[in-house]
Length: 337
Image (cartoon, rainbow, N blue to C red; front, side):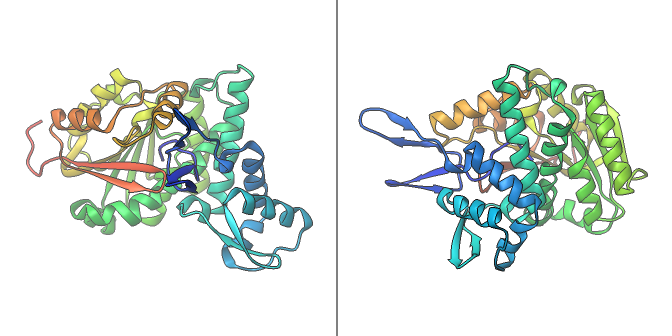
């Protein structure tokens, strides 16, 4: 999915709660930017460690922790607001974010944020072309959770597309495929579906081929070294995932038109909304900063709507999911390309 940190803060009157990207609260005179406890580096380290040891599953299952370090990490995470104590060494989830219910995704995401921050801090560069393989794998594997959001929350709202997936005859376009996690997960959930993944980075595609081979889906997933700006397919796909913040604006503008042409009539596109209309000053700056470091650009919701409508897409709907917003847009059932 779109790059957005889990469990950032939301302003609620004079209190701050987990669940949104609004990290500001009015102070005396001017807005004051707060630091989310859930984004503190040692909190991320604790989340990553406890998720990778199996202890996080005990928290999800409501069973007691036994390891001394696990309990210390858990108590730290209670103070950070990620979990609450039920009693003794038993804890439960306190954050309403799907990522926290998936130990593997949570661990991968926390490691990705830590690695990326360290690279930026040490001047190593964090654009995708310079990322180390472990960082790419951490991010890519964590993004696979997006497939479950697509399957569980978005496909039911796209009945024409949903029927193709349910029948095992759908075709999925994965723009910026990364290590292939979204395509792999969707095909695991919908046998018979095929996918085409595009990426402009050869080293990333090498990792994707390894991941796809390990999933035994090589016959169903085609990986292309290709920019979406150069896509020439027509009427091929029922659904396209287009993570705009990772795509430079010129390529994105060409890509929207190309993906529109590549969709079957009645097919749909899903895109993250980098800057929702109600985003705070800090949230906007954060989106711009993150997109810039990723080699893309952050587009406001209103700008995104204008671009999609100009390309001929209809039924534009914005869907809120915890810290993220996703937009669905549909190609009319009969469209002249």
